[in-house]
Length: 326
Image 1 (spheres, rainbow, N blue to C red):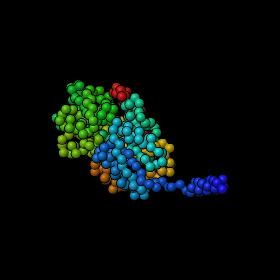
Image 2: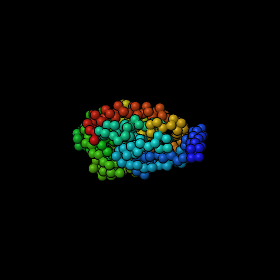
Image 3: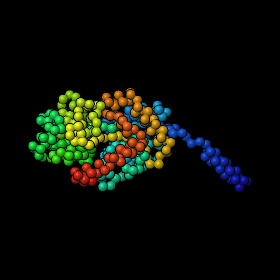
Image 4: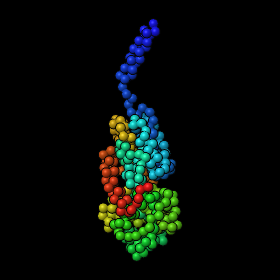
């Protein structure tokens, strides 16, 4: 009897298992999605990410929950997502630092920057080169002239060693043959007061953080660092327009998944993001706080191309500026 009972139980288990495997797999997404943001709540990337999450939810039929995992130049968040199950339910908001600069910033990374599947850029923002009001320059030509008359007298802030903020001004120094001393700070919250207080005279910042200070006249905007003028500050000429053709430095943020995530999930997410980014309402929200849309950089292919373009440029700037990995 016991033997017969065991045979029946085994048979039932096999039948149930076969039936379970015969059932169609759940269509992605069948539960809430987690979007990991490597910056604190309230910052520019966080605000952008929350706008995206709120707009994505209705299109995917599931809520998209933002989780802030801050610290270590986005390393903590990137490591967490790289080690997450590749099931399509954990996303990372990756930045230029995450996928490009950190390769040269650190001797050893706790994650592989190539361990992600690019889905789409969601934000693209040139920096703005700012000056203290006491500096006798209203444009880039004036800044360069002053710097050459007073070699080494000017100092420039950045929001961290190896940051795009530093690299933008290192590129300007290389192209113009000027000397300025780099003073790193821990983000815009420290760098902007130092610039306003004339502890430093120049700073390249995100438009999101600095546009209010430009509008109220506390800081001067000398140039933007992208290939074209920004919609947020259309009156400010680019570096390239002011005599330095080919100058193009911009920060970006994009959605990535862990490597080996389901192709179906990546494709659906890409389509949903394209729909969100095409919305006038979404565009207006971004412009209201100084963020730009990715333009023709939407989609996985364009995102991968952006990374490919930035890698040799950023690597070269690290070497030229003598920035040693830590």
